Length: 157
Image (cartoon, rainbow, N blue to C red; front, side, top):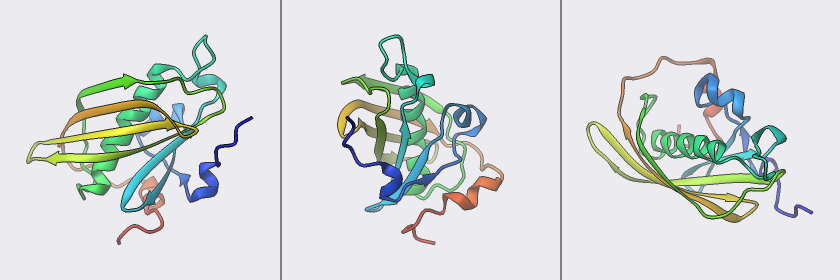
């Protein structure tokens, strides 16, 4: 039985981020906690591999969105498009069907053209993935209808 607290009861809210591809693979939930952007999703049937655990591709998608989106908020980069240059991952454990996957990231360095960040991802509190990435600072994106929803409680205006 899953005894890990439901992230939706801990202040997470629906997060329309990552574009159409990500929205088809979500839903994702986000919160602002202790000056950090945090992201979550629940492992559903459509996310699992034949071993009935979250597919590595889904965890990779989650890691990519987590550490690039955290940079926008934690390094105050605004709505720059941050295409991935490299993404390294270490899979540490499985994320079972029904588990809540949560992640938080650290922004290591921001230059004129690049962002370096890393993230730790857990499933029901168990560390499942360590990821690091390099992202190119692309052009500013146009505002989208989902932007207002990403004003997470506790964030600075």
